[in-house]
Every structure is written in C-alpha cells, then in structure tokens.
Amino acid sequence: MSQSIDTKKAGKIGKIAFGILLVILGLLGVAAFTSNSESEEKGELNIKEMIFGHVQDAYNWHITTIGDKHISISLPCIVYGQNGLDVFCSSKLGHEGHYTEYNGYKIAEEGNYAGKIVEVSTGKRPWDFSITKNVVSLLISCALLLIIFLSIAKKYKSNGFCKPTGLQAVLEPLIVSLNDDIIKPSVGKNYKKFTWYLLTVFFFIFINNLLGIIPIFPGGANLTGNIAITFVLAALTFLLTNIFGTKAYFLDIIWPKVPKWLKFPLPIMQFIEFLGIFTKPIALCIRLFANMFAGHVMVLVLVGLIFVFSQLSVGVGLGFSVVSVLLVVFMSLLECLVCFIQAYVFMTLSALFIGMAQVEEEEE
Amino acid sequence: MSLLTPDPGLLFWMLLCFLIVAFILGKWAWPAIVGMIEERGNYIEESLKKADEANAALAGIKAENERLAAEAKNERVEMLKEATRLKEKIIDDAKTAATAEANKIIENAKESIQLEKDNAVKEIRSQVAELSVNIAERIIRGELKSNESQIDMINKLLDEVNIAKS
Image (cartoon, rainbow over all chains, first blue to last red; front, top):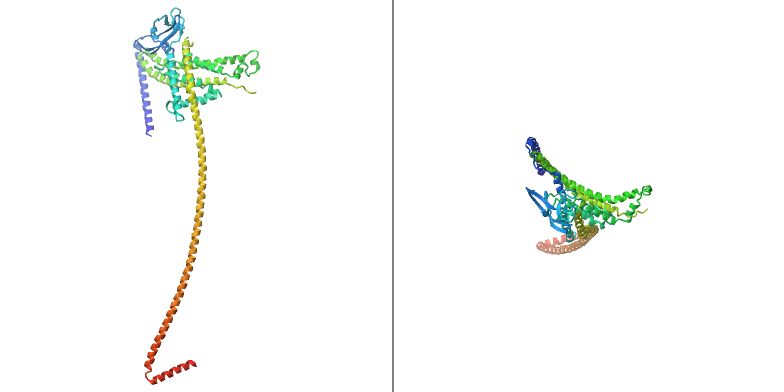
C-alpha cells in the first residue's frame, strides 16, 4: 500500500519535474532568439568529418581532446611495402589535422585511401596489417569471449548437475534457447556439426555490438559496423553452407523442380538459384553492417546536433542538449535491442541457410 | 568510398581471430556447455521419472499397509468378540456353579439346622418331661399326704382312665 503511494508520489514529482523542464526549455528558446543577434561566428564545425572519424577505423585510439591536447592510445602499424616489412608506432605519423611522413609512409588526407597509410612516392597502399582501433577492439572482444565461455565451461565441469550460478545462470537460458529453438530446428539432424560456428557467431556479434555502444575505451569501436568484419562472417556462412551442402541441395540448383520451360532452353531458374547462393550471404553481410553503422551514425548525429545548434547560439545549444540527450538515451536503449536482434538475426539466417543446404533427397 | 570496401588488414586479423576463437570455443567451451546442459536435462528427466516410480511404489506400499492394518483391525475385533463370548461363558458357568454350590450349602445348612432343631426339641422334651415328672412328683407328694386324698386321687385317675377307655 505504502509502495503504491510512493510510486504515485514519484509519478507526481516526475510530472512536476517535466513541467519545470518544459518551462526552462521555453525560456531558453526565448533567450536563444534574443541572443541570436549577438552570437558570433565560431570555428568551422565539420559534423560529417566528426561522424566518420568516429565510425571508421583508425590507426590510434582517440579518447578525447582537451584544449589542443589529444589524448589517444597509439597503436602499432605493421606494413609491408616498398622497403619490406615495417613496424612502427602510429604516433610517428602524427594525428588528425597534421599528419607527418615516416619512413616513406604517410596517412592520405584525401582520395580513395583517405585516412589510410599510403606510400609517399607512389600514393599506393602497401600491405597493411596494422593493429588498428578495430583490431584492438576485436582482440578485446575475442579475449572477453574466451574468458567468459571458457570460465563457464569450467564451471559446468566443476559444478556438475548443480544449479547454475553467476554468469553461467545468465547465459544458460540464452545458450539453451539458441541451441534448442534455432539451431536444432533450422539446421536439422546434423546440427552438432555447426553449433561451434553458430554459437560463436552469435556471441561474437552480440559482444561486439554491445562494446560498440559503450562510448569510451575499451568500447566505442564500430567493429560490427565495419564491412570487413561482416564480410568475413558472411563468407564463413557461405563456405559452411556450400562445403557441407548435400547432393540434393546442389541438384536443386542445377535442375530445380519447376516446369520445364523455366529451365530448359534458357536456364532462367538455374541462373536465379545460382545467384541466390551469393545473394544470401551478401544480404547477411550488408544487413549487419548497415544496421550497426546506422545506429552509430544516428547517435553521433544527435550528439552533433547540440554543436550545430550551439553555432546558432549558446542558448539554443543548451536547450537542444536536453532534447538531444533524451534522444540519445532513447537511441542507445534502442541500440541495445538492435545489438541483440542483429546478432540473433545473423545467427538464425546462417542456421537457416546451412539448414537449407542439408536437405535430403526427397522420395517421389 | 572506403566505407564499403573491406580493408585487407582488418579482413586478415578478423579471419585469424575469429577462427581461433571459434576453434577454441568449439573445442573446449560449446561441447562442454551444451553437453552438460543436455546431460543435466536428461538427468533431471530421469530423476523425475524415478521419483514418479518411487511415488507409485510408495503408494502401493501404503495401500498394502492399509490393507494389513484393516485386516489386523478385523482380527482384533474378532478376537475381542471371541474373548467377550468366552468371558460371558465363564461368568455364566461360574454363576451356575456358584448357584449350585450355594444351593447345596443351603440344603446342608437346612438339614443340619433341622437336625439341631430336632435334637433341641428332643432335649427340651426330655427335660420338660423330667421337669414335669419332678413337678408332678412334688405336687403329688404334697397332695397325697392324707389317705383320703390318696384314695380320691386314685379314683379320679381311675375315672379318667375309664373315661378315656369308654
């Protein structure tokens, strides 16, 4: 009873607070209009560059800039180019705004390879195996995956049939539902051959998505919103689908069960089926990449809006910051959901594609 | 646009890391976890089945117990009935025996009382006779002091005898 009164009170207080907020916002708006004329031009703000700087890969992990001082973690660059193998610290190449040359390499400022290491003399890309921001994030997430799941596996061994505890209890329902409700029915009777891949893929994407929405180190790298990562995952699904495909699956591509005119003089169906082999994993690759990329861009745009409005006037900027923060909180919560959904979708579709290639010869 | 062209360096690291992680997890983590979960599921299912069986067995035992208890109860009732019957019989027998005994004793008593009474009566009679004789002797002695009275007496007695004779 007292609890319900408390919540009612809290609701009332919330309403009052919201009202006050609206009033303040209104006042700020008025203030903004009055101070508009007094506002002076500030330094040029390039939102597009800011956003792309955040969502793309980088040679150092930039944390923040205080005044003119950049606080960032320098990462090793490993390149193989005109003069053999070269390993150096990324700080040798300078930082955004003023890049420096080192050992015949520099970071291109424009062109196709903007932001990447190129050879100064030819302008071409060397073989670049640098430990970039994304690679570090990848290593962190892989380490996390190994720590989490090996410790859980150990716990299962030591715990025996006891009640699961801690992290084990958190992840068990997830693992069980993925294994029993998706992998088993989607892949079919050979599911045990693919669980290692499907479960790893799910948790790999999930953990990287989650790390991606943490704004500061060690999160914040847009790993699953990078096409190279999703490409590798989709390629693995493609390989597993086709390497372990059954005879019936390939026969269905070469000689599908459709009216003859659709496949005989002109191999229309064969063409479509053949194309389908590739479009399925490509869709996987693009879907994950686009979703995570868009989520990051959305949050960054909302934050960027504060600075765009601040250019108009400090008042508008302040006023909008409240709206912006609310929207960013909303977006981040939505992203949490998307993190799970995308990992789930990728794994489910992979399981389905692999399952489709596991068809047995139908008896007629 | 570099956004849509995968970077070979990252491709390489990703492939390497992911395959290593997938291999390690696939070898040591997933089989252990999934296997253990399945085993535990089976174990729980089996345990439940066993518990059901045990319950059924227990129910059987209970029914058996109840049957035995009912049987014992019946037997007890029977025995009680038998005992009551026996008791009544014993009491009846004892009663009849006692009655007979009592009757006998009463009879004996009556007999001895009669005997005593008869004896007493005899004795009284003899004493009474003796006394009467004595008294009569004394009376007669007193009355028969004179001759005349003695003759009167004899006459009287003779009359009496004659009267009695006639």
